[in-house]
Structure formats: C-alpha cells, structure tokens
Image (cartoon, rainbow, N blue to C red; front, side):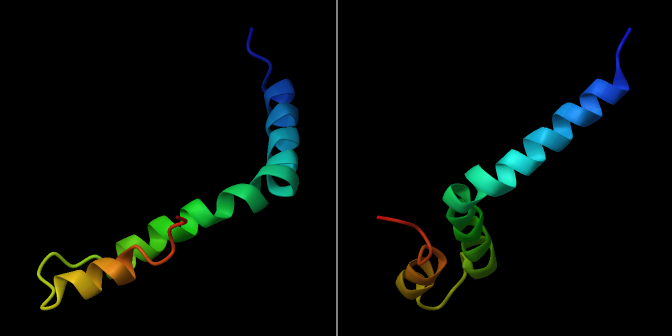
Length: 60
C-alpha cells in the first residue's frame, strides 16, 4: 500500500534541499522566462528592440 506519510517526509526534505542548494543556481532560468513572457510582442513596432528586451535576462 502507498505510504502517504513517507511521501510527505520525502517531499519536505526535497523542498528544503532544493531551496537551500539548487534554487540559487536555478533561479535565473525562471527570471529569464518571466522576462521573456512579459516583454514578448510579435506585433511590436521595433521588433529588434523588443527581442533584446525580452531576452535581456538570459545568460550568454
């Protein structure tokens, strides 16, 4: 049978470790996606400028 208590403990441990160890290295990806979503406009008058702004949070 499925043990929900063990799953909850495992998820809590994963979340704690993720926030402490992985999030600082992964946060930039989520910020870059958010920036792209907020700035993308296929109908922009100045497409090149819009694209630069939409991709401004990406790493080279």
